[in-house]
Length: 172
Length: 405
Ligand code: FES
Ligand SMILES: [Fe+2]
Image 1 (spheres, each protein chain N blue to C red):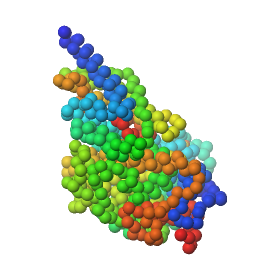
Image 2: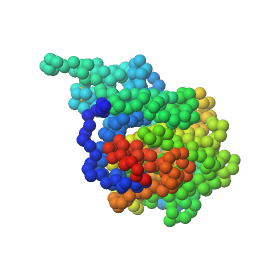
Image 3: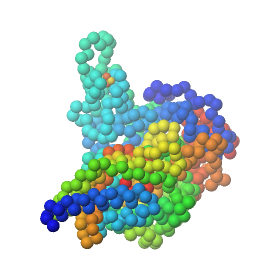
């Protein structure tokens, strides 16, 4: 296999990882699979463009270790899930739906692939008549390729909206 | 004494139904658009001090930020002399919004209106207008400065009032200053950033929730999952005879004794305080100040519509915190109290449900702790909510009748 082929394969694999990510975060029953999409040393951050451009450190979500990424699932299932009593869940039932725009991949010299993509996330609440636009922005991801296949080394969710339209439960 | 700004409506919508018992809250007050308009005048530009920021957010001359006082858009700015001002964010000519973005610096150039290029200094005075030939002869720039709120500072907290009759800030805050001192220390803070989110709820429901100690164990089950409890505490209502602020105090289980349900339990660390005592305060009507765990946070409650409220969470470190402490605060703050925080989301869900059913008519009832008539209350009581509404009712002109209970 020529070097260019493996490059193309890596880029394709990075795109598929992003597609898998969307399948997982849009399905409340599959949230346990979400941490597996990240490398053992990884970060997941949700930041507003406003804070980012002002150089302010506060993030909406700052999961800067794999432990914190795993903990997010525990918070969703245990903290907000009323200890697993699903019918008593303490967050309103909102079905998330990601719409991810053109995906742009840039292979890096260190073997990783940088992935950029636009996204919009809609939430359809069980208790309301109208879908809600939760967030609009851009993914800035780095995908690495180890023995376990392609995984996110970092995923930055950069929000265009300085004002979140709602609290959100599942990862963006 | 009157509001600095003209009123937009003459009085409360009549008849406004209010049950005689002070622990019953008519649901209409969360859905009535006429009452909402009246509140924007009578409460937010009434005789109150509205929390609009901390000096650390605008440290340099010319630094500004925008938000609103009730419905009135304002610019909070440090002028060239270093004085903090709160200016109405509307051009004195034909009303165009002067500043679009949330924050910036205008030391050079001032505030320039895009519509006809009038320019204002950071202190709100009109510097110049474009092409003033054929203006009326009596036109004087001095008459067209931006309307300003009165401003008072406490430990760096910036308060604005559009009313001439508001008592001095110290009198207004009363014993709440003791709690503010505990949280703010010498008042020298470092601003770390803010997160804004829309709650689908009336602003009063958001505020009364903080007075409510009853929901804490019932709703916030995450506390139980890690076996985090309150080991005593109380709910004080400083100045309850006038304004009814809230000062909730609690002492929580130290991290070492928690159930290590999370891999990273630093979420519950208390590294910057000698004990695990927390303070949660409401400066009536719409400011929140807290030092929960190691999180130094101010919140500004900004009513958008009768059923929508913008909450701005602002996060701080102490001015001379070492970088690793700053990093800890950044990791902890929004993870606990913010739009994706472990605790906030549950409040949002509950409040949205209360809002949705406020059209069901009838009254919401406050019970727990109410056999006691006056503070201090237990930290698990909801009784302090009564005092919030007593203060509110005085402002909107529907005071509680004497002798009712
Ligand atoms: S509206 Fe601002 S200059 Fe005319
Ligand atoms: Fe709460």
